[in-house]
Length: 128
Image (cartoon, rainbow, N blue to C red):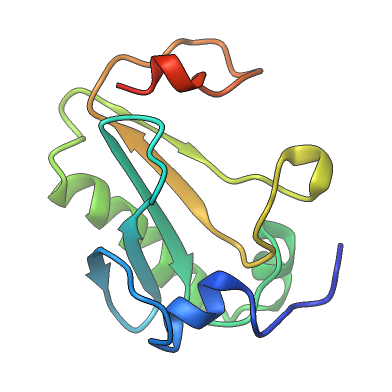
């Protein structure tokens, strides 16, 4: 995995240098709408801190940060009204896992039925 790049797009969003359509923010996490949604609801949740991946986050973040982050993910899903029908969480790890931004983040998808197949994400024509 590459070293953490303080100029990655999520670091810049956290610092307020780039805008986002914010859904939630607390001391542990920031959640915002994806600019290229793959579902009616497609939100990114990122921890506050310099973590490249889930593995890095779990190994290096204080326990309170880990708990606070995952509670923020659950709160966002609840606040968006996704709990009754269900939703999908995805975290890509490394190049082979499809990770493009090397700041740990979780994709929260909802608002429509999802296929049970986990090998591929929705194609462009299946987004809505």
